[in-house]
Image (cartoon, rainbow, N blue to C red):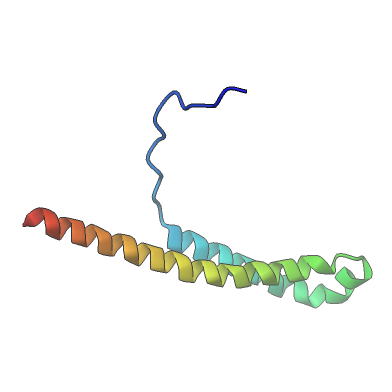
Length: 89
C-alpha cells in the first residue's frame, strides 16, 4: 500500500467567534433540557428518557467548552501581543 501524500498545502484554519458559538450552543442545550422537563413522564413511559439527560450532559460539557475556548482565546491574544511587541523592537 502506497503512503498517501498531500498534493497541495493545507489551508490556514478559519478563526471566527468561537466563544460566542460555544456559548450559544451551551445555552441551546440547557434550554432544550428545561423544555423537556415538563414532559419527563412521557419520555420515561416511551423509553426516551435519555433525550433529557443528553441535553443536560450537552449543557454541562458546553460549560467546560466555554472555559476552554475562553482560555484559548486569551492565549491567542496574549501571543499576538507578544509578537507585535517583539516586532516593534
